[in-house]
Length: 115
Image (cartoon, rainbow, N blue to C red):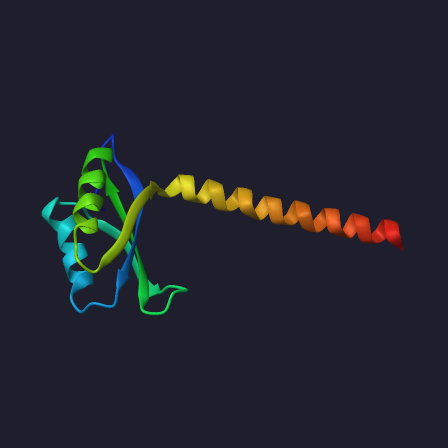
């Protein structure tokens, strides 16, 4: 198992793309040229017809990930690409779930008061 440098974080790179043969190969090549190891790779249709969402989880330094994402955005079939640190996303998702649970509890309390 590869050890990761002190300045490396696990980043989630998201790219919205048109359906293009070979684009996934091209995107993974951008990371390979920078000697960045892909931890996970997901590709699936988005809510918009004809647009796909690609998520790449990669260990990198902040500068290398910025360079890679800028290079991805230059691809013709890429609509938008961005990145965030994976643990930031996790914290945001946990906060969203807590908000939903809180709202659900408030609704139950209101329903009980009206009965």
